[in-house]
Image (cartoon, rainbow, N blue to C red; front, side, top):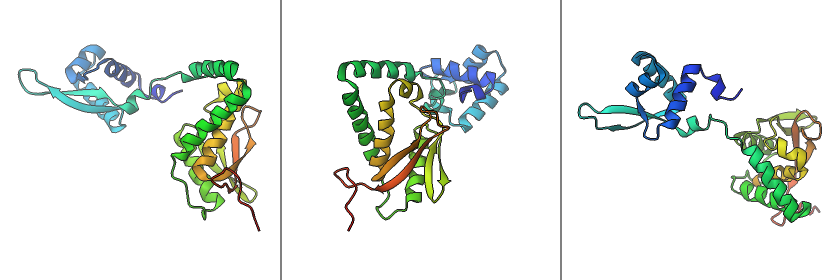
Length: 221
């Protein structure tokens, strides 16, 4: 069940009405559209405002007292499903047919590197555990439902929601995006230890040694 489905029926209907109302809606308008009382509308609006799904907007002149209006917020819009998976999978299939497997893999690696480079990396002196914790936060913000977990002496990253799951089943090269993103975001070599698409329970990653600007691990001794 998505976040929208976790709300009550009336609040879902209210958010849909606000989604359709480009200039926002007043309490009176919502009463008419939802067939509920003023008090009920205000209670639901307060609850939705408290969760940042709805926000107040500019009052419109009504010939009398200014009339408060409410509109759906960006967080509220984000509750509604956006099925990018079908489109993205079709796009990858077209790119695979036109570019070939090697070119597609290189493109996904480059995209992961570009996005990962925008993250603020920890200093080179940071421990593997600190790097793993930061990477888990980055992945979690992208929807991976990622946490850190101990595996022997290592603190590793576990992602329970492969955001590219449907695509990765058809195009395993997609996993190169994850690795390139994490390596660019951390400046460390990342090892893919377990993969949901390949039958694992999670996507699990281990933090390796620091990677130089040329993408190679620094020489020792």
